[in-house]
Amino acid sequence: ERYGVLRGFSTSALAYREDATNADTAYTRNKLRLTVLPALEEAVPGATANIAAFALTAAEDDAYLYQKSQALLSWKESAVMVSFSEEKPLFYRACLTAMKGLGLEKDYTRAHLDSVYALQSGERGAYVTLPKRLRAEKTAKGVLFYVETEEKSCVVSKEQPFSLSGFDGGRYVVRVE
Image (cartoon, rainbow, N blue to C red):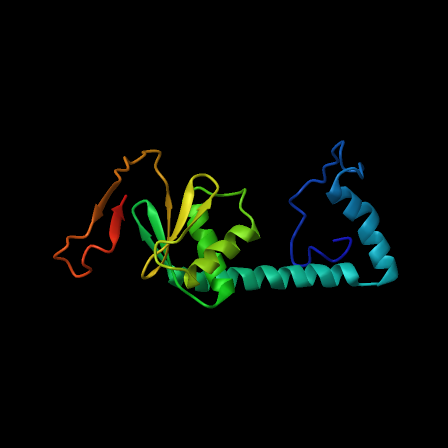
């Protein structure tokens, strides 16, 4: 409440607790609380309360966008389909929900989300490999998220010229893998 951050929140049921690290400015949270915020408040009175109000508004907006992004999600057994959307904030939140639902809680970056978003304009079958063996693959309906299995398929390769009686007169070779 020192900076007006906890307006509307009752702390009467909580006992204050001091721990050995509270005063150590080697920790970022303490440096911000003990050095940066007081200096900011001195330079711009009310700045900390305004930052807290903005953070609350951003959290409310984020919750709303997550709720709206649910419409893009289809859960299927061990996979999640995210429908295509040009609305980047909704698409990203739907992708994050899919990733977290499949076990990817951390170790992802904005670059991963950007790559998944780019799949929308890629060819069907294009994919992005994400941490924890998670894969995002473009399908006809959206981006399918699933965990890759460790099973390896056997690849058979054979070259066969088209038949001379075929449509190309044997000029092309088809390679199937």
